Image 1 (cartoon, rainbow, N blue to C red):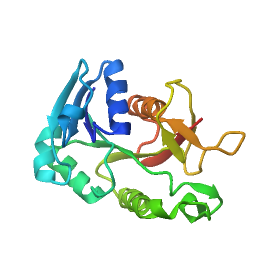
Image 2 (tube, rainbow, N blue to C red):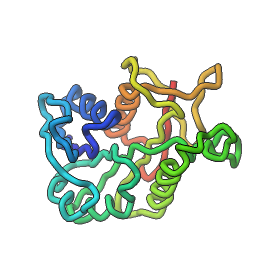
Image 3 (cartoon, helix red, strand yellow):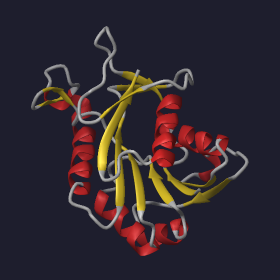
Length: 202
């Protein structure tokens, strides 16, 4: 596939770019600082600011899908405007874990141990997902990671969930950026969650 990755220089974006290249996809890796993007076969590094749909649209035009690994200061409306302008019909989003349920009707962000300093960023992810839920003209998928996503081993294993936080036997929810990227590209290829949210953890 021809895939555009937004935020391709970040932790998640760079691993997603590597995984796409490993599987032979053609990648348009877009970031404000393209020199920080991995230099890999099949990867075209492009400078672009996703805050501006007029600038972003031509960079993604003709792609089969866009994968966003952006911070949530770029809103769903901004990103969707760029896809519509470019005529791209599929969007996969690196989401947040805060809106996942830890008990029936109780989100992770509502739990007493949720760090206060993460709350503002987390609310941006919740607003992004809420905006996507009413979108019917773009085939979107919102991929919430585990509660802890961090550098680590590429194992190729993970467990899937939908709207509930996935934890291990010790009650810990975590995944490496490398395995998160595997799950993201698996979703791109298998297309299991159209217009839906899913999650993955060990």
